Image (tube, rainbow, N blue to C red; front, side):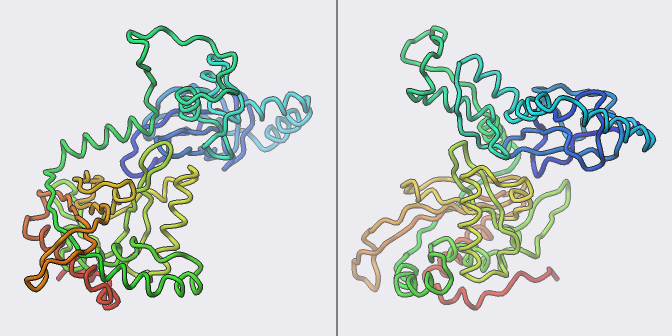
Length: 398
């Protein structure tokens, strides 16, 4: 008897909902065949059969929340002759019944239930292979269209008719829980500075057309900030570390998390070894990851292993904020909107495009001096962006 258990779900992901069983008790399965699908906070995870045999017992039913390494099912190993016999029996079943079974597993059970209760059809799914997930249905209920709302039953009366109660999606629940855990666990502080964006904007304006023609991607601000952070992390390695019990793990590489807003919430895809990339490679990676994030196609591996994060609230018009750490990381840089402001240069008042920078850090491992120095180095690199070309990758600590 072989056990089928919940696989590792990714960094800081501890539970999932069993969305769909592709097999039922007594069915024949082959090794590496997908037998069920788990719905996590950010992506869907397919579970494969570890061995060939008969699915003798399903322990976790559809819709149940399961933790990492929880028992899902039992597979009985049978002789090859029995497997062949069972497969032949299965192939002789009515084709129409097989078609119905295949179609039935297209959407998550929780989504199917909500759609039936609210008489909703024709929803575009964000899950794997276009599967409709529970969050898709909740979004459709919260933002009805004439085609979706037609024939829908009246909603239960609210205490206040101008209020509406909508269940939080799993992603939103997890975001809320993790942000609160981050505040409760880390000794989080934020330090601020401001940067004159004139040099970056002039350099970008000078080369953006040539850059696009040569590399096929636009030259944005994120590559400059990524390079500047890599430069600063090389000098202040504790910002690129994490706490593990009583140990501090220093990273001799930079896996940069780039926070991205999606229709279902915030996700942080990770660009591995960004410290070894060129400006063009960084811009291409950010563009590709952002597109996959917005379409809901990011895999779990693409969102784990980050060592530092950049969050750009400026795209939404934020003038200043205090970003929250993405555990177990020890630092996160907050970018903000560029705004023309009067500043003093050489005893003269001039108008310059300025941006506030915010570094939130874990004071358990990063001292105030290190945090301030880090932000100053980022500022210096951005005000002299050509210096980023001299950056070298982090080296092991002595």
